[in-house]
Image (cartoon, rainbow, N blue to C red; front, side, top):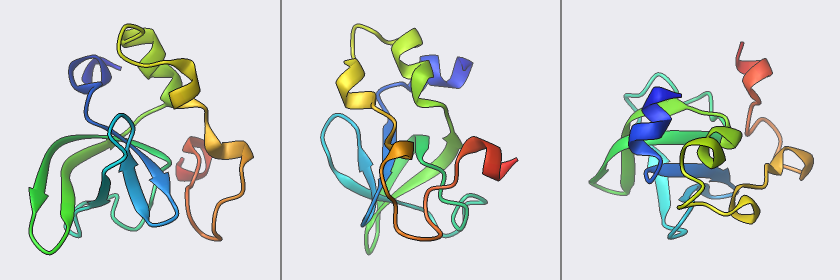
Length: 101
């Protein structure tokens, strides 16, 4: 949760076409060299964005969306952070924390 407190403004949520940043709805992707590239957790925090052929997130870590309201209630509204785990996701996408182990 300490990383979340420091980088709460660099948050992305899994969507149908990759990830979208929470505040600006910018489409971003996990960098292919990342260990989470094939895992596709629902929520990520990233350290930096690098633009090559696409906008890639580097140095990513999986987070729980509830942490964002704890550390940054001044920045996020609960409506922005509604967990989409109850919504349908494309098959084989968006593993929960439990599924990732």
